[in-house]
Each structure stands twice: as C-alpha cells, then as structure tokens.
Length: 526
Ligand SMILES: Nc1nc2c(c(=O)[nH]1)N[C@H]1C(S)=C(S)[C@@H](COP(=O)(O)O)O[C@H]1N2
Ligand SMILES: [Mo]
Image 1 (cartoon, helix red, strand yellow):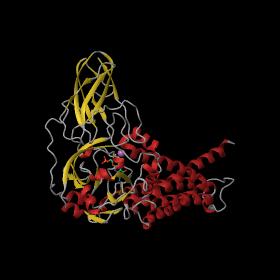
Image 2 (cartoon, protein in one colour; image 1 turned 30 degrees about the vertical axis):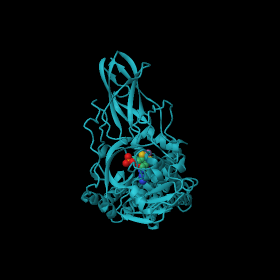
Image 3 (cartoon, protein in one colour; image 1 turned 30 degrees about the horizontal axis):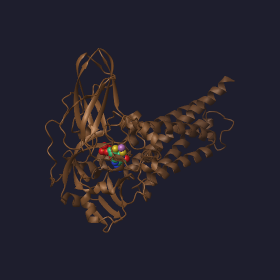
Image 4 (cartoon, protein in one colour; image 1 turned 135 degrees about the horizontal axis):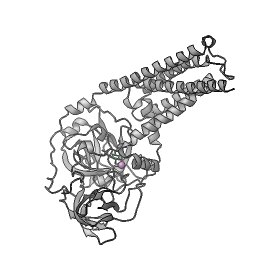
C-alpha cells in the first residue's frame, strides 16, 4: 500500500516543481522580450505596481515601519513566494486535469496582461511580452507533464496523456522530467538576466543625465552659516548627500524620461493653458535654495527626512503665466507613473519658493528622485507636494479632485508637524558615565525651530544648544551635554517652532496626516 502512495506524492511534488519552472519561464521570457518595450510593463513590475495601488494606508504604513526604504525588496520577496505557491498549485492541477491547468495558466496570464495595460504611460503593445511569456510557460508545462503522466497510472490522469511516454517506463520518464526541468530553469535564469542587462543597455537616460550641464541660477541660494552642523559626532550631516537621501515612492521601476520628450502641461481652471519643455526650464530664471523634505510616513524619531540644495523654477512664475481662475484652490500635480498630489494653490503662489526642481545638490536630479523634473514645496509633506517625474499640473479645486494617497485614506492636506529627533546616542546604546554628548536635528518647515529641550527621565526640561539656522525651511540641529549617572535612563526631546508653539506630546500614528509625540530614547549608563 505504501509504494503507490509514495509514487503519487513523488509525482505530485514533481508536478508542483513543473509549475514553478513554467512560472519562471513566463517571467523570464517576458523579461527578455520586455527589454524592447516599456520598462515598467514586465509582469513583476506591473503586478507589484498594481498591488501597491491597492495598498490601504495601514499596510503602506506597516511596510515602511517594518522594512523602511527596503519596502520594495520586501514586496518582491513576497510576490516571489506568492507566485511560487500559486505555480505549485497550478502544476498539480495541470497534472491531474490538463485542461483545468491550461485554464488556470491562461487566467493568470490574463491577470498579468490586465495589470500591464492598466499602468499609466503603458500602451497596448506592451502586453506582447506577457502574452508571449504565458505561451512559452504553457509549452514548457506541457513538456514537463508528458513524462510525468508516463510515470504511473493516476486514477484521474487526463485522458490525453502521452501513451508513448508511459511505455518508456518510470526511469526514463523521471530522467526526462528532471533533464527538461533543469535545462529550462537554467535557460530561464539566463533569459531573465539577459533581459535585465539588455533593458539597462538600451536605456540612454542615465547617459543623458550624466551629460547634462545645469545652468547657473539667476538667484543663488542664501549663504549657509558656518555653524549649521551639530558638533556631536554621529548626528546626520546637515546637507544630505544624494546617495543617502531617503527615497519614498510607489514606483517599482524608476521611470526613465528623455529630456527631449519631457513636457509639463499646465491646464484646468486657468486663463491660459501652457506647455513647458525642458529647454524652457533651462532658459528660465532659476533659483536655488536649501529645503528639508519630510515624509508623512516618518515615525517619531524616524529618518524619512533629508535636506538638499534644489535648483528650479518657482511654480509661482508658471502660475502667473497660466493665470488661475477665481474659485481654484488646489493644484493636482501628476507624475508620469500615475502618482498625484494635491497642493493648496496659495502655497504654490506665496513667497516660500515652491519650485519645479531640476537640480539636487549641484547635480541633475538622480533618477530615483524624479529626473528630469520634480516638485519641491517647503512646509508640506511629500505625499501632497513633492511629485517626482512630474508631467502635468491641473489647476482645480479640493472639492473636485482627489490625489493618489487621499483616495487611499490619507489626508488631502499635509502641513509638516514640528518634530525633534535624537541621533546620538542611539536607542538602547550603552554609554560610559560622565559627560555624554547628545545631539540631533529638529524641523518645522516654514515656521523654523527656536528652541529644543531635553528631559532626562522625569527631570526638568533643559535647553539644548541650537546650531545655526540656515532658514525656516531647513532643519535645525542641536546638541546637549548630559552629566550621566550609572543606570538605565530615558532621554526625551521636544522642539518649539517659530510661532512659539511647543511640539505636542500627543502621540499620533503617521496615518492620516503625520506622526506626532516626543521621541524617548532609552540608554544604559555604565
Ligand atoms: N511620482 C511620485 N512622486 C512622489 C511619490 C511617489 O510615490 N511617486 N512619493 C512622494 C512622497 S510620499 C515623498 S515623501 C517624496 C519623497 O521624495 P524622495 O524620494 O526624493 O525623498 O516624494 C513624493 N513624490
Ligand atoms: Mo511620503
């Protein structure tokens, strides 16, 4: 009795493996052929992007809290595991009932194609790689099933199984199965790698960015005082290098835009619709300024904030040419990848210098930070203002239009909340007793920081030493010398903004409009 059972479970495991190999073929063939199509149209990217679009606020928040800026890698791992499980099931189904397996594979293929063609900036022809991938996957699945069916007579084995194969006997069929599976898996690996390399080689956007020389600003950035950096070792650098700048977006594959193709349409409730080209921006009166960007998903004490020198055109100047009509109160900025942000119209018109940025710390924008053009709006969280790869500005009303995250449970407006952060010592650090250097940063963009205070355990609040202020739209660093006594201690920090308001101790989650509360760092003094 045990022997046939073993054979059946063995064959079932092989059928599951066949499913996984076939799925790998679907993805690999689509990746290889996809090198000649829109980069964001390959199955994994399209499936992942669609998944992200359906992400509720708590899940986005959970993903960022758990994986930080590795949230995309985590998504790929999760997708890989899900696809593998589905593929195992489909393999077993195909083994028992071929027709049902075929239906299953075609259904999955249709889901992939559906995800591909509904991506923003993707055309119908971009479905071709996924369609060809699905066909290749079916062919491979069939080639693996034939020797498998020949292994033994499963009571419900499909009627159309290959009798020749069965006559070749178990050993031959087993060898044939594993040989086909092995060769196919290796070929899929090569195809997928080749597709990625080919895709990268065919993209000229990185080269074009390297070759781009930015114009000098008509108005230079205000000089940065010498003492902006906290003297405490280990505090974040006041100016964040581009490579260390946090990255948050819904783009699984970074959009690649040619500057010659880039256009910004300004329309909606305006007297004068206009279209700007990249050359228009290069020829315009650009300004440069330091602005600290902050993400609404940043938890208390988190590092989803960065400070850079941006070069760009004031959006105020663009709006002055377009002339918004009475009644308009919002600008919906849209990215080429489907993301959108709702920014109050008056914020883009006042003197805070909201801009269409083309430069970051003296370089063209890095691709991940919005090349060739993004928005930078001092004082607002990124999700309602900092649209990367921006291609469209619609002057409209809050009552008439909703932005990407507002549709998903986040707020429609997002002024940045006052926040102080301890960078040194780190949470759970062990420090020697005596003089301990405490340091960090604080921000309240457009209001500025006028005071930072430290509380040890339940002691009195003591004023930290503020570093120089560059402007009210950049973060302000601080330092504090603590006379530490042995034992466990809590260091709390809070800031006061330029209006005199003390940062609230009321704890709030990032959803829907930003975290609040005082950071508390536990350290052990030895
Ligand atoms: N196209 C696009 N732009 C976007 C986003 C996005 O998902 N897609 N995310 C926004 C959010 S939530 C933030 S906090 C900032 C982050 O900008 P950074 O990645 O350059 O730090 O970009 C904003 N611009
Ligand atoms: Mo964000």
